[in-house]
Length: 409
Ligand code: TMP
Ligand code: ZN
Image 1 (tube, rainbow, N blue to C red):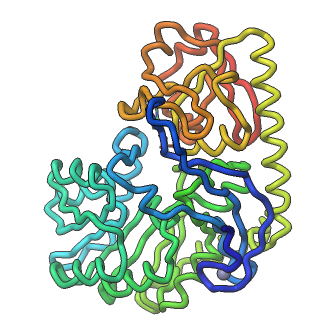
Image 2 (image 1 turned 180 degrees about the vertical axis):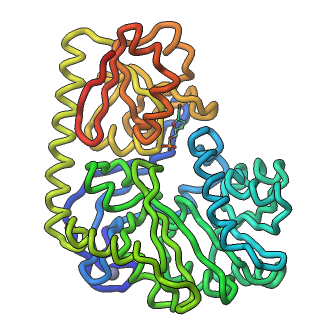
Image 3 (image 1 turned 180 degrees about the horizontal axis):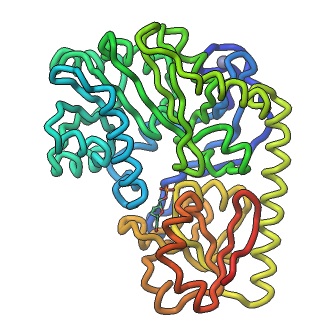
C-alpha cells in the first residue's frame, strides 16, 4: 500500500512516479532458494510542506537488516579513507572535553569507530545486523546490537552518560521513524554535543538522474531544506552542512541544541542553492521522472546494440543500487552475462528480481568481456585506477550516470 501522508509532518504526500515492483536491493539469493521472492512498489513521493523526499511504500525493516545482510563497509579502500577523514573531523568537536563519548548509529563493521577505539576514546556503536556486529566486536569495537530508538538511547545514556558526538553515515535515510530518532538523539546528546550525519544528497540525485539511490532501505533522500525542517521540531538546529563525494554525491549535516554552536554560512548558501535548483518544487520531480525514463530507454538501446553486435557484456560490482537499475530497465541475463563482485557472500547468487548470476572476478580477468557495465559508478575513480588493463586490452566501459555513455582507451 502506498502511503498518502508524509512520515515527518503528516501532510499530504505528492506522488510523481513509480519504478514498478521491486525486490529488496540486497536479496542476492542462491538459485536453488529462489522461490517466493519478496516485492514491493518502489514509488517516491514529495512533501511540499516539509520538503522531504521519501518512498511511499517500504518493506518492514526486519526484511532488510538481518543476519545475512550483505553489506560490509570495510570492502572499499576509498570508503575506509573517507571514514578515517570523518573520524578526524569529528575529533575537532572533542577538544577540551573530559573523557568524551562518541556514539555511532549504524556503525557497521566499525570502519569509522575504529579510529576512536585506537585512540582510547570511549565509544559505542549501534548496529542492528548481528553478523556485522560480530566483525566489529572482533576488532575490539564496543557495539550494541540494536536499532537506534529512544529505548536504546536511554540504555546507552544510563550506562555511559551523555554523548559529545553522535554520528551516522548512510543510516538516517534508512530509518522511517524520524520523530523516534530525533527523540532518541535528544535523550542521548550532551548539552554542548553535536549530531553529525551524512547521506546521499537529493541535489546530486536530481543532477545526475541517479535514481538507483532509490531502493527499499533508502526511505528518504534528504536535502538541507528537509533536514532543517525535520530537526527544528525537536529543538535541534542545523549549524553547518558540507557536501561529500561518497555515494555519487552526499551531504553531511551538523546539528546542535539551539544556540550551542554558531551557525556557519554554509547553511544559508545551500538553502539558497536548493531553491535555485528547484528542490522545493514538485515540478522538478516531474522532470526527474522524464529523465529516468530517458535514461532507461538509452540504457536498454545501448545494451541491445551490443547484443546485436555479438559483444560479451558483463556487469562490474553487484551494488545494492544495481537492483533498482536492472529491474526498472528490465535487464536480465539475456543482456548481461553475469556481474563480477568481490563480496564472497554475493558470489554464486543471482541478482534480486532479474536473476543475473553474480561471480567472482576470476572469469573477468581470465576471459575479459568486450564491455563492462559499471554498476558501482560511485567508486569509478578507484575502479578505473585498478582496472587500467581492461581498457588497454581493448575492453570498453558502459556508464549510465549522469547519462548513458561508453568509455574506451
Ligand atoms: P556500494 O558500496 O555502492 O553498495 O557497492 C558495493 C559493491 O560493489 C559490493 O558488492 C562490492 C562491489 N565492489 C567490487 O566488486 N569491486 C570494487 O572495486 C568495489 C569498489 C566494489
Ligand atoms: Zn512533510
